[in-house]
Length: 331
Image 1: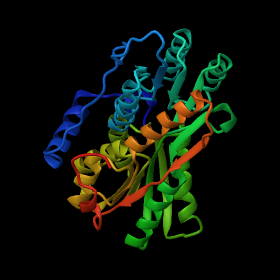
Image 2: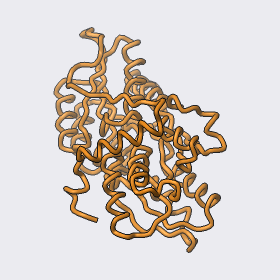
Image 3: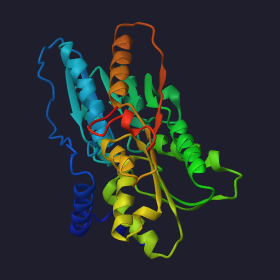
Image 4: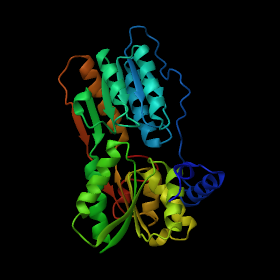
């Protein structure tokens, strides 16, 4: 399918195609990206305030921006401080940023790991320093490494997409866009695969790692098409990579003939579903995830009883119910 460098190249041509695709199909919607400049994001400067660090895998995804904003709103209302850092899908950078947070003596770190294995040593280091570590959206496989976990039911998200596909199509050749370095992505793929397992009418013809990014998913999908591989369905582990696949399909004139499923419930994906250009998305609730994570953090700091792992429910959005969710924002 081409070298890694080719797949990761964000060419000007790809960016233009993506922009035109999204502007034409989602003209009423926009994406506001959070750009971290490495400064204290809180207005509160009380020396006695609690300090909360936020390190999500990338802020180039509105889903994480919504979670971060939810956390900031509650924390600042309590007179405490929020420090947000953006590793931009670089695991080494994330580790360095978390070590800096440890040096800044934060009380809590909310983490969505870029790499669920590489993050382990710095998480252990933080907890040895008495810092509360809460995994948000995605986690590590060893739950004993966390003080708290707040994630969507990612396995169920994959199950929901597979079940709906089987309801809509009597057979399918499926191309999966995965994110192998995250447990959440792996859980979604496993839920999907387990649901179609044993049914010869539903065949996975290829899996490629798009890291949940639109501008990686697009050239990957283009290369898969150009290779001659036959597929009529795409399952993407999030809506950004689903939109990247759709841009490539649009470019090839195949968007109407390939069913695309994603996970998130992003406004743009809901717009695609409303226009019958996308089959479904399993919707997450980022504001709720942020609120629950902050509540969990304060309970831990205050020595109160709390539920260590919280699974937030997901709901499938299709053409039959998209009107109930709207396309102008997140649910």
